[in-house]
Length: 299
Image (cartoon, rainbow, N blue to C red; front, side, top):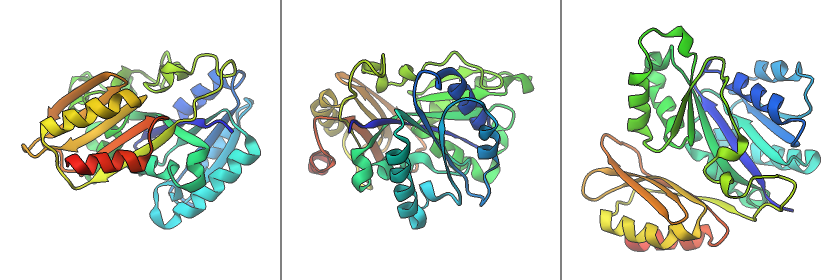
């Protein structure tokens, strides 16, 4: 069984995630067998009921109580997702994460046990509510967690603000300097599934070629590296990966935002980053154990 590309849609409450998901379904459901996973912290799933009103062809798995991102319920989520994949046999999976979810744990989730043999993380899209971006208060940390690992940030509801999006873009760039950004209303963007930084190498005609047997893996560490050690590490491992991205805390005092696509390596030093080192890789040429051992030798 070839691994299935797995995409995340994140974003704070009311940002427009379900609207974005509906646009993907409308555009691709006649071409690709889509599996949708909706994860809510509440016991009832209103968004799932909204999707079911569609006349489009897709399979839906509804997960309540936030189990996709809660350690205490993680086993339940993994079992439910494995069963869903086996029964529905989707060609692509999309999860609409709860607005309260911390999506930085998703690579660990899909690397769990037998699930790692079935899916790989293809891309991470984050929807931002332009009108309420500066008003999330105590939940600001959640929003920044969702932004940190996003490949694409969609600044939605721009018709509801008068001040422009410059301040929002500045915050996004400070949090994730490599994310592509788009501005829109009602999540109406010119969007292609093959645009993800990983899938662009081989997505193309989904049914024409077999998908590569790739692995998604994550390193989380409290260790720090020197800038030189980081460069040595990436020079060795980036050419073996379709994608490496994340944040590495440096011994020099700053944090390096990292993005690698095969032989292209980008490192930008940022300040005011108060999280552990976190790197995600997608590759078919090495294992998490090999990658982690190499990291520990240099950190």
